[in-house]
Length: 108
Image 1: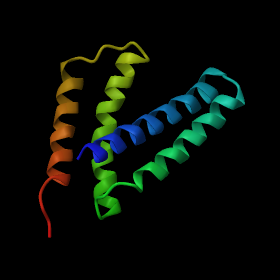
Image 2: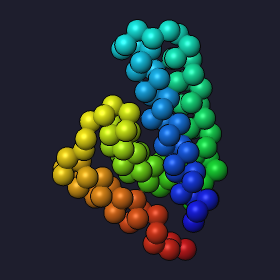
Image 3: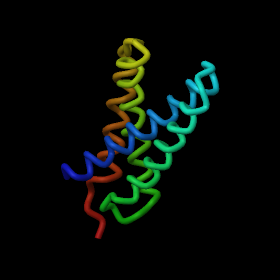
């Protein structure tokens, strides 16, 4: 379980961080290198997800979606300095419940 959570967090940071670096490059006029390293982080995200033990692509990526929403709220709070409100936290909690529903039941 720890392994899967660590992979979710690593992939989430690579996806959000890569997207953020590309945002800085294209929207805020940073140099091409910001975009290049953003692209490399996005490639890393795609590779990390394949190490999950869950058997189906769709289920893993659906669960990643919920985790990424939570990480995006935290990214906005920590990096963009936008304090999440009650509805941000409520939405994030609902997403984590969805992740649990998708991943935790045994389906043999």
